[in-house]
Length: 30
Image 1 (cartoon, rainbow, N blue to C red):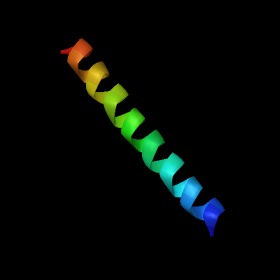
Image 2 (image 1 turned 45 degrees about the vertical axis):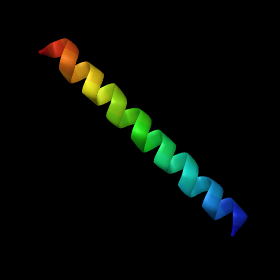
Image 3 (image 1 turned 135 degrees about the horizontal axis):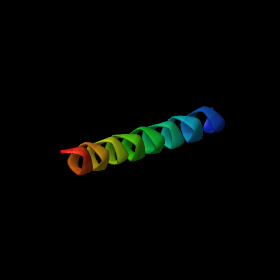
């Protein structure tokens, strides 16, 4: 179960990072 929780946290971190990158990319494009 610990591994699943760790995977979930890492997945959430990756998702947040991707969202930030997309936001910065959109700002640069605009």
